[in-house]
Image 1 (cartoon, rainbow, N blue to C red):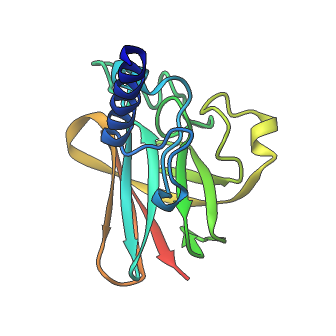
Image 2 (image 1 turned 30 degrees about the vertical axis):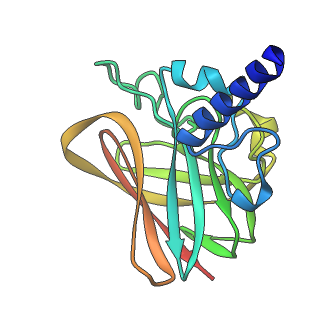
Length: 199
């Protein structure tokens, strides 16, 4: 009886921890999709220096989800230094930044069918190239030729200089009850607005 009680307690704790991060672990009900997947034990999520987070996107009465890791600057310049201009970068940490779509949509200028897609960027000083990739199950980096072979499309997004620096990378969704809005990226002193519309 004691072993059974311990097993049930462990399952409850793991489920609660995964739920707190808005992510799914193996065996979670499919009805709760879209979800954020992750590698490793759910109990290790709380120990990550770059926490896993998500943004709900509401368009035309339906919900999509963006999943991403949230690195901090640590007081140093990251994009344009550690992540050089002109080189592909995952726009987050750990697992790739991933967009789960239950409906047809257009991200930037790229038309997408329902499904899950990973995103990455090629940053430059004044504008970034945002790339949509068909493999959401890869690790975030490196982004080499093998990863880029699954690219679906790309578009340019102008950057804005933020008035105040942002220590920890964040995404948020800006929109209304209509079929169009934008994913807003902010980190360090760089802001990006990525249009997202339901088709």
